[in-house]
Image (tube, rainbow, N blue to C red):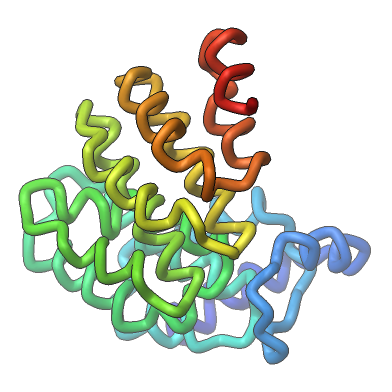
Length: 230
């Protein structure tokens, strides 16, 4: 059997029919062809970790699968590979290219979050990052979410300019899961630079949903939060 077949068989062993409805709640991608197996996410990741040597052609085969948990395993394999400290640069680029080329299959908020920081963000740390601006302007909300989530790789290095720059572009975004990402990652950037977070919220408070302002400012002093919400 191929490794693709082996990985899917390993997932099928973890199926819990009673969990189908619970797992389905996480999928917000709006893809009518997506099927839910009933494998809780904490059980998907260890399976994926057993197959971290998959060829990218096999990973792409998994991305093409209609099953949500299989695609989660695919992006998890990509993430595990991208985290390798000694991964050759050519392999990092191949992962980055595959992620962008097959973003049509990375079509849920958690599929983005699972891989974007290391597969996209970490690859761009020492490169031109303008692709994130392109993604932020995309008609696809999952690509827009990738734009902001990828900046976590920069935040970890103390760089917050890109996070707030992308967040400025997405401040008026009408997609709830893009707004949730804006809130989460600007709050994270605010741990490094609270003044930059306050400045972002001040200049965008006419466009940002109240829920985004509330979540993004969660760690700021109460007096500042009150002023931002007024």
